[in-house]
Length: 117
Image 1 (cartoon, rainbow, N blue to C red):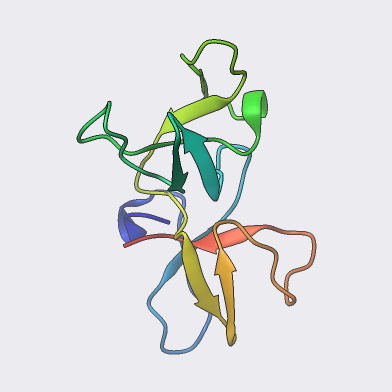
Image 2 (cartoon, rainbow, N blue to C red):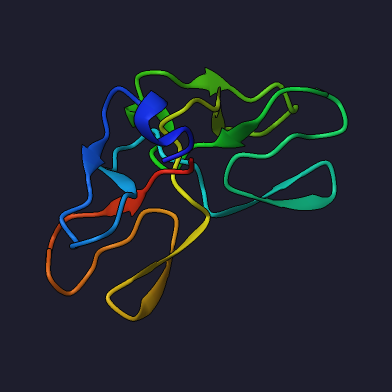
């Protein structure tokens, strides 16, 4: 998650010698890749029309309790401003590379991520 120890929902990694922070994922997680005004963005991103703010479209739509409706006409996507608990866009774990919220072989049925920071 972004912010590491600044995220109030983080847990310390259980991998020996690793100081990364992680959390289980929810409906409010950012889409790994999303389109906005003709450009492609990843995870939490700053867009030209909202300088100084990182935001994203959420994966879980209206199931995310912190969502806002898109202001783009005809679009039903939900979005939120980003915080210290955002997932790393890409991360390594036990020799494999993952993106955003992912299920790993050692924790079947759960999506999780390392936080940024």
